[in-house]
Length: 269
Image 1 (cartoon, one colour):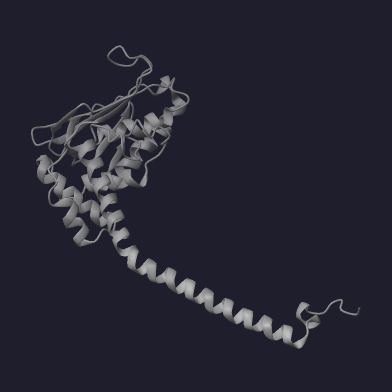
Image 2 (image 1 turned 90 degrees about the vertical axis):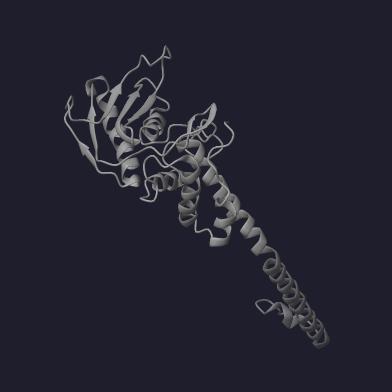
């Protein structure tokens, strides 16, 4: 016997080794041919596919911006101009004793959005009359809707937001963190909901508990200096689209194809 510990091929006759070697050569050539064909196919197909995906990603992001920042509400396609903060947010809590353990999560959510918007945030003492952004812990809700969380914004004639207000329900044990990040988005100028988008503003993607990558792009776009408060929706839609194209690393050609014909929100969800 005496074959223990030897390479497997050592037990083959000489002609067997030659056949095996020839088989390996043929297999190697076949694999090289297959790999070469796959690479060629990828070269021929990928550019068009990539372009289509790039354009679709930009179109989806632009639609999310229009629906969240440039329309009156979910059930209306009425276009609205840009509304945004231009001065520091001066934050105060009206009744922190109602939910002391929720003060910091609420503050951090607001700070996170303000940081993305490059808007300074100043913490004030409770009840400070100079506050322009006030948080209430309220389990009674508004408009007869108990269990409700609500975020609002007020703006002046120039469409500069001058006041934000949050009413956060401390009994929302299972999803308070979602309320805390969703509602301030409204107070920062996103007054509607892009339900088809993967965003904390969407009621379709309800599992979001923090800003998504798209949310960060939307905030940075709204607060880009190119978008001035009061910019009409048709102009803002095209400008926002091109800003988003930069964040998404979209080519100039794809940006032109997607952005040039945009006019603002079209159809309400």
